Amino acid sequence: MKVLVTGAAGFIGSAIARAELDRGNDVVGIDCFLDYYPRAIKENNLKALRGNKRFSFIEASLLNEDLGPLLKDVEVVYHEAAQAGVRASWGRDFEIYTTNNVLATQRLLEACKGRNLRFIYASSSSVYGNTEQLPMREDHPTAPVSPYGVTKLAGEHLVRLYWANFGVPTVSLRYFTVYGPGQRPDMAFHRLIRATIRGEEFPLYGDGDQTRDFTFISDAVAANLAAAEKGKPGEVYNIGGGSRVTMHDVIAMVEILTGRAAKIRETEAQKGDVRHTYADTTRALNDLGYKPKVKLEDGLRAECEWIRSVILPLERK
Ligand SMILES: NC(=O)c1ccc[n+]([C@@H]2O[C@H](COP(=O)([O-])OP(=O)(O)OC[C@H]3O[C@@H](n4cnc5c(N)ncnc54)[C@H](O)[C@@H]3O)[C@@H](O)[C@H]2O)c1
Image (cartoon, rainbow, N blue to C red; front, side, top):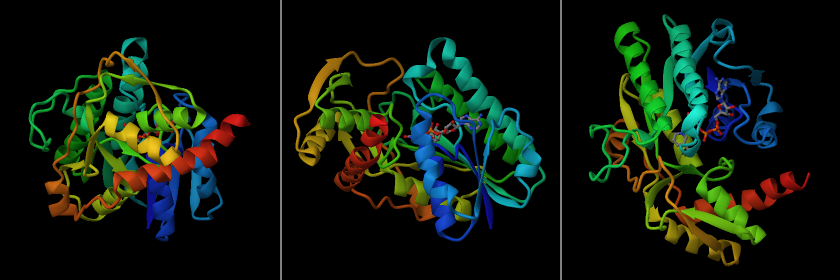
């Protein structure tokens, strides 16, 4: 089988590509290396893939590449490409979000019409916004509180429309904070671990009592492979990790794992950040057999090791 991974140089896309190669499939990857974080990190994500004969990679944007040839013989599209990040989505940069998250998704969907493939869309828990209803369930109202969340929700609507109108079998996965080796450098765990190992300050947004449902990368990848096989077309699934904790809990764990005291500087909560996330994953369990396996402490240990062995040496280059 041949699959297409968009955003293949990114955190989640590169991990999906690796898993598909590991189970013997051919993988086509596309990424335009948006400069949201250093290219060196993305090149490192690709390193393990590039050596594989069944992997081909195109450096291009979904916004202007001829997508027809790219989709030839492809049976599954994992659409991970996006401008990620909540906090940067205000102001002038919103255009980066609308073009890469909305227009690029629509362009890809157009190219998928009439083809025999399944389409898995990377959505986000940010579509829910601030809600009193916890855990969050797929049929709860959506009311994003960040411009980023608005674009991810627009993408969800688009993929549903292309299923309803053109029969492209699309599935949306709402990821809840994915972490682990490869995590983007703007994300809290990455920043916290890096700062703690280096003895630097970690600016904590808000009072630290905010909670997140954290999902280890291999669980997010497993959800994608299961969705490609068993996802119901037109459906939306929460993909959480079953590890809902406060930032204070995470800081304490990182201090134990790194053997160092974190230097925390409390700063104001950021506009666009929600107070709590907590996934009800019953639907994903029932339809996809999805059950998160990796405990937070084990996942954090793996991320600490990756930051020590990959990120810090990369920074010294
Ligand atoms: N990491 C998380 O916790 C999380 C949570 C919820 C949703 N998501 C979603 O999951 C997906 C992957 O996130 P990630 O953390 O791996 O981000 P990432 O930034 O590491 O990867 C996304 C990749 O997409 C590429 N890209 C963006 N626009 C493109 C375009 N027009 N053409 C080609 N490539 C393009 C970027 O260069 C980048 O390498 C995104 O859609 C994101 O919105 C991530």
